[in-house]
Structure formats: structure tokens, C-alpha cells
Image 1 (tube, rainbow, N blue to C red):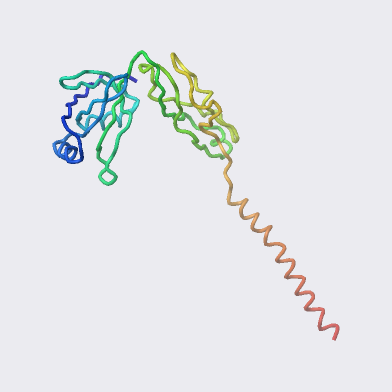
Image 2: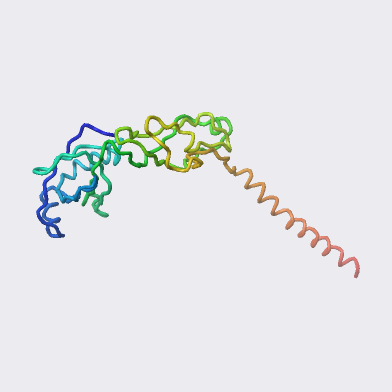
Length: 221
């Protein structure tokens, strides 16, 4: 989804670990802009701007304007990023140029709505199997999310990717038979206890027979 957001970037004259370290100390992180049949460009961006986009509702599917000082202004998406494994702060980002007239493939999150009848009336459990699906569409028609109504699901029933309506230029890339959510029966503790009792019965009978045999032996003497 395209947003009215502009992120500024500075051209990088040099590369390497030392340069990247100095850049992070100054409050910037290294990034690379590529795609749209043009040469990659090394830039420096503010990590707060990138973090704000990644944590927004549309996340990495957000299309925003990147203004590179002295070079170009182009719509981009965050294609990849790297976090520090300990501090969790951003270390690097890959930004992909987007041609707004060309279809692209993206993964869109899927959320459920409602309480299934199989949970409310039958005591089942709703399980979320797939949390996103892959679609192809024009950049400006990327949805923020898909919402699936699971209210009518009973135990043993499910919702599949093929049931999600594709609007505008959208086409489904994921397998239409992909299960998104289903309602399953819970195994109760009562059933477990009954199974345990059934397993213990033969031992009790066997023990009883031994006792009877033991009582009969003195009678023979």
C-alpha cells in the first residue's frame, strides 16, 4: 500500500565495516537502493524512519518515497533489513525501487474475526494455521491485511486461502487449499482417566486369580 511518506537519504561515498560503524555512531545506518533496471545506490538513512515504517500496520509492504540528496526521488519498499541480535536496533536496510505500473508479489497478513460456533457451543479450539498469504497485484492495491470471518465454523471445519475474495488487480499466488484456520476438538481429562482405568483392569483381574489359587493350595494338603 502506498503511503504519503517521504524518507530522506544521503549518498555514501565509501563502504566497509569501519565506515558503517562511524555512520551508526552519527545516528544513521547504511542502506542500498536497487531495482527498476537501474544501478544500485549506497545510501545512509535514519533508522527511526525505517523502524516507524516496519512497525506500521502495512509494515514492509508500505510503499513510500525515498528522496536521495543529489540523485533521485523514487517510490520504494523495504525488501530486507538486519537487526542487532542483542540490542535489537536496526543495522542495515535494503530498499527496492517500485514501478507503480508493474504487478508485484507480496505476502499479506491474515487475521480472524468472531468466535466460532465450534468453540462457543461445542467446546472446541480455534487453531490458526497460516498467518499470511501470497498475492500478486499492482503496488497501489496492496491491502494492509485480510480478515476472515470464522463465526460459523464447527468442529472439523476450516477456512482456506481460496475463500478470500481477490479485489481489483489481486490474484492469489498461495495454494488455494492452504488452511488458514480450523476448529478442532479438545481431548478432555475425563477421556484420559477412562483410558487409564481400562488399562488397569486386566491387572486387577489377574491379581484376583492369583489370590484365589493361593487359597486353594492349602485345601489340597
